[in-house]
Image (tube, rainbow, N blue to C red; front, top):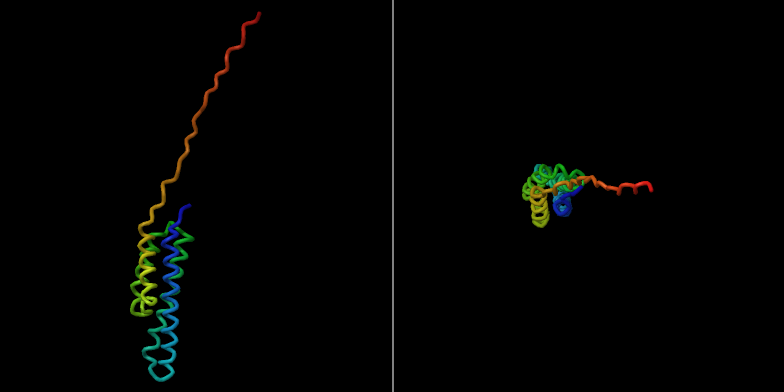
Length: 131
């Protein structure tokens, strides 16, 4: 079975960048909470969740290729949502996940090959007349 490999791999790599940026912002949020700005720290942890979800979407693209359209749409949504919460994975994660989602949506599996059996008639020559 064919799979949207390019879309899945780009989405996974983009998800890693988004996850890294989310982890850095989560560490910053923990620091802000420690010095008294707890109201902003919760929002910074959303980047971790978005990065993890983007990774999962990329893996599902490869494991269940029949869901390529839904997973492509989710990859695009998570890429756009990562911009304010994880700085788009240093913008590189946003671009990779966006391209991966677009490639997954545009993926067209090839038509299954059908083989038709042809009957071969072999004629044997008639036996020689008795002598």
